[in-house]
Image (cartoon, rainbow, N blue to C red):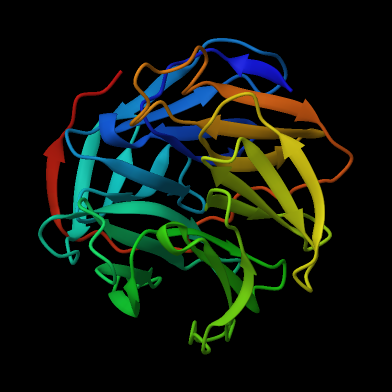
Length: 291
């Protein structure tokens, strides 16, 4: 596995393939970043918030506009003019938004986690096309992922603190969530960011395990890819490569290349990041710092 971008993210996450470019975040620094998709190189900062930025999804038909899970809620970020339009801040005090992704139907799903990792204090939220925010699962600790099958009928959700990946049935038309069933458990590290490839196999970054793991739809471990850093955080498949973000957070001293983006050639294909379906302008608008 090669170093694709030698950036030193404190908490790199949320790698996504959007409009032919790889984008990701440095959560605690509130930065949205992009790196070249065809060759290794330095990162470019697209946006910066003064609160943690968990993940983003593109808004369909609006290049440069992102729906973000950030701070204690959700906002629209416009990289063209640096504006921030807050939608809702539903997460409890003492918590922040973590990873998030849109399903194939265009809804965003995002987890909120407590800063102190209080067991059961994490929440999974769903954002509908009308920007209504709904809590859909409680009792989590550090929700990560989610990731969806190609038809949108299956959602995978990790609880990193519990070392568990759950599988939910999803109604693609309504977004209604079925009861969780344990899909896989990881003992030597915690499941972190995930993605589903074009064959509907699940790829999982293993925080603390220096690995990425691929699982069949039945939950069988199919492949292990070693990563040369202790804390891989998210995965993205694009252009014949597996991209892996990482984190230096909590490592003292941090080893060389902790926080970098890595890449390795693979045969499996991925899917572009699903876009948020639509929105109507609401909320309070403010100006962020913007590269």
